[in-house]
Length: 226
Ligand SMILES: Nc1nc2c(ncn2[C@@H]2O[C@H](COP(=O)(O)OP(=O)(O)O)[C@@H](O)[C@H]2O)c(=O)[nH]1
Ligand SMILES: Nc1ncnc2c1ncn2[C@@H]1O[C@H](COP(=O)(O)OP(=O)(O)O)[C@@H](O)[C@H]1O
Image (cartoon, rainbow, N blue to C red; front, side, top):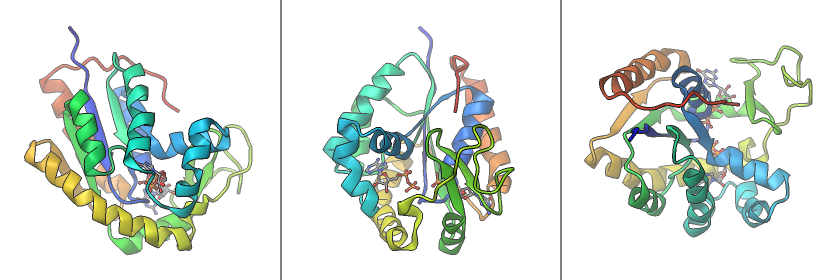
């Protein structure tokens, strides 16, 4: 039976998880599942899940674990015959343990980025809500100011990237991430990367994944990524 590659990426808001995940998905053909993007999409579409999570996401608070696992685990079931990369889930120890009951991860990437860098990046982050495409007015500006490169639609700044919500998000991240990181460290699957620039971190992540996927051939099932 084919063995699928299961990975997760962790890091505070603005640490480059989305940017790096897209590169990984493109280079290695993994399915990419971002909890934040999925929640925002559900909120925009006003689905039952969206209505439920909206008050938390708007305040930059974590969605309760039982809600999060109830939403995410069925999505993973849909991807059971694919290799995948999770971004934003699991976020807490309870979520990590729930995931652990179903899947053994092969690799967890943890990004350590200084606070000042995070603050600067998020104040310049703009997104195209329908696709989740992310821009940065300095690092990755759109071709036309304020407009998505592909559709030409308007870009927005997320409420939770605004300074009021940002501090709360960073505080929450720090508190809850440590036991999750310790769990993956104890399983021997955690790889941490530090720095202020994604382009400098990326070659190390690229070669780590090349090595992991080469030494044990995984079935990546070339997939469409956003
Ligand atoms: N200046 C700068 N901005 C970056 C870098 N890497 C990512 N970004 C931008 O920083 C913001 C946060 O990155 P993102 O991948 O969305 O982070 P996430 O919140 O961890 O998923 C986005 O606007 C990115 O375009 C970098 O190396 N330098
Ligand atoms: N695994 C999770 N558990 C609880 N809440 C989550 C989770 N993933 C996303 N969220 C909610 O969605 C918001 C946005 O998530 P995300 O896009 O991953 O943001 P970040 O930029 O914080 O990495 C979070 O502030 C939180 O309210």
